[in-house]
Image 1 (cartoon, rainbow, N blue to C red):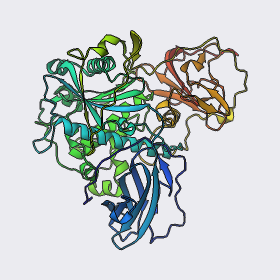
Image 2 (cartoon, helix red, strand yellow):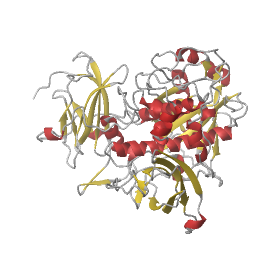
Image 3 (tube, one colour):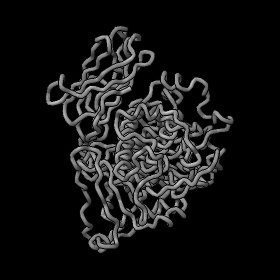
Image 4 (tube, one colour):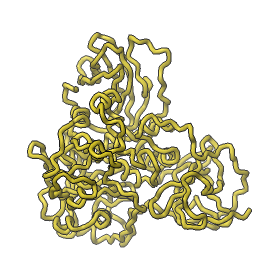
Length: 592
């Protein structure tokens, strides 16, 4: 239990240049940090610290430096279960000296450096209030359900996912990279947007209609920017009650204005379970462990059939990560975060000993403990989404009654100004929420290079999966080289092997006649996906310092391939600088 309140303050996206190491020959009477190295640099501020402490200890304190005086810093207390602990600490920018100490006086010093990225690419959390709605989300009378509380919960939830993403990429063998948030650029924790969409109309729409409308409205308004992806929540979600719903489908049928859908540049969600989310760091652990039973007569149960507030938090926070990952071009996988593994994000922040202790009878986490049925959640395995909007300059200049109102609600004591993009200079420009910016340059000169088959990996069986929360191998590679995870600005010149290049999706192409992908920067990953579901059915990765400039598209002879060889498939590829190719094509026997 955390006894000291922690103020949630500024954060910045992740990236770690130094590899974390686990100390061998551990002294049983010492504190050992398992996932971070002393002096490590992080680009995000909300950091998860995992470690070991002597088995006799049950609690550990962490003190953070304030004003260059470690003794005057904030102190928070965290549990030690079976010798393991997990701590969340909020780092200000610069050098942070931390001191961990158990109740019996065992101490450990740890220095972490927080340096924001230089990129302008970020994720912008938005709370969408429909016309005619007061902005208060549905929840029990004991909870603050105001727009201000919603913005705080969304902001902290986004930071938890930012930290989780970094940890899971590190576990997958890549650097500790993650996406950047609006607050990392000194923007607000969460923006509140007053939509022109009427609340009754919104509640009559399905989630695809809501996603398209909100996407168009955002891209016609002052928040429109190619440097942003949007994480939006609808205030007007209304659960109408369903006594003891036996299926998740029955729950959804009783819910209006709900969405859990992501793709292109927008991930959109309902707010019916937002009351289970924490508002401060000291609430994170208790909220995940909250065994309060959901009253389904009045509140939505989106807990993966766990039936508790803590289960609702885990499933809904995980579904946000899953759908947000679609905006980073990820497809679906059989397991892991892009499958159904997102339901278990609580396992990242809670030690396994706590989970086991609290749930002794639940041995199969993928089964409904009430009736043994397979569990469900709001995620639907559907094809990727896209919407293209043409924005006229007049729409941005006339902000009287024709555009939404944007409010900045920050989670910090000091107000953060709302930073909006400059107006478009041209009379009309097309902005889109589509991730598939794939005009292919078929006039590029042929690249005559031998394929390096030794650097090709198909279905790596050695991939480490410490829990159900993991990025599949190809998903992790896509994120590791994705523009939204890069250190520099998308539009800046980058240096690669002493040569200067511009990032441009036109520089990666599919040559159908030879069934190869080509990029002058080197291919990092190729996936085949089903058109209808976006399910990855085969992939290849190309690690190392010199990836091939050309690579053959993987065959359909994998255990996941159940598609006719000539049936249309999505071919997705990414190169070393984040150029992506995302096309639908029918594969044929290559001609060499």
